[in-house]
Amino acid sequence: MKSTLPPPVVSRKAIIFKEAARLFREKGYSGSTLRELAGKAGVKGGSVYHHFSSKQEILFTIMEHTMSTLIMRVQEAIATETKPIDKLRKAIQFHIAYHTADSDETFVTDAELRSLDADNLTAIVGMRDHYERIFRQIMEEGVARGEMQIGNVRLASKALLQMCTGISSWYRPEGEKSISDIADYYIELFFRGISRTSAAEAGGRAVEL
Amino acid sequence: MKSTLPPPVVSRKAIIFKEAARLFREKGYSGSTLRELAGKAGVKGGSVYHHFSSKQEILFTIMEHTMSTLIMRVQEAIATETKPIDKLRKAIQFHIAYHTADSDETFVTDAELRSLDADNLTAIVGMRDHYERIFRQIMEEGVARGEMQIGNVRLASKALLQMCTGISSWYRPEGEKSISDIADYYIELFFRGISRTSAAEAGGRAVEL
DNA sequence: GTCTATAACTAGATAGAC
DNA sequence: GTCTATCTAGTTATAGAC
Image (cartoon, rainbow over all chains, first blue to last red; front, side):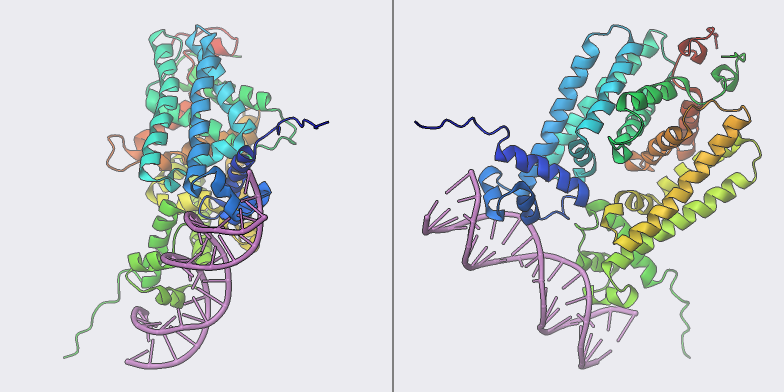
């Protein structure tokens, strides 16, 4: 009888993809060699070219997949909320969760824009603008509805995304704090600030919390 | 008569240093070639080795100089203040000013830790910890004196530094906003948060500002 | 202090066997 | 789909002339 093996759980192409993200993060795109990548993926150098046409295509595939997922899933995350403040909370939670779960891919997507060919760069920058616009729109809606006080939405969204993205550069799953604890603290920080009383800092009446 | 030319305003070594920071930022350490660096500095490839013993030494020199300056000058910046809240304000202003003024050097120092040899890495990581500790200490003092409300100083200082450092990745001197305007806005954001009223968000009594 | 020439090596990519 | 072998070009670093 012919033994029918199940199809592989992950394709070789998927393994190369994942190992490339890990290696590009560790050594950078230029600092990573195709032979080392192949070795980590369990094949010889030449075999990589059966799955990808070039090293550049591997990088672009990682970034394009990451940005698509980010855009799609942040929209899903906020779809269930109506209040801007709740949308922002959900968007931040998702952003941090994804940046720590798939940290190799998101790190590479953030750090290796400079390694992209001209056409690929245009595509990825466009997607990144799209993603950032989602955050800006939530903030604009929050201001319009009187739920948020943001003098400069463009600056505030950049500050927010950069502080949250930064988590992936030091977060380790072995640590004592969970991702969701960290996310909650960042949300509190961004919403409330560090002043003893915000009202006092902003020149208003002091309030004991 | 023998014409006595003045000494060069900047030494060739200083030119190589500056061009290396620019090139490493643009293409990454691995992606930058010694020949291109030499060309930008106005010499041939081999001549660089008269000033630096290796490409690695150039990178380390940039990072070591940047971290020393950062540590020294942030301490000068806060020395004139007594209140923690004012120390933090000055420290943030300095951090942002330096990261936008010498953005090539600071960017490389942040992004190329992975390109350092083991010994060089230990040295730079130690200096970076020292720098971050200065911010943590200000926050701890602020909490102890009742001027700041920070549940987790370690997380808050990371969030702060990452959001401020990020400015150097998009800031352009031609832009409409000055560095000091941006710094003031980031300080306001970090101190006050984005909530319409912090008290309301934190569960306390709402205050009209 | 900068040059040219070159050593010693490694890179990405391709061709064709199995 | 993976292998081996190889091409071409580019890499850091050194040696010695000027």
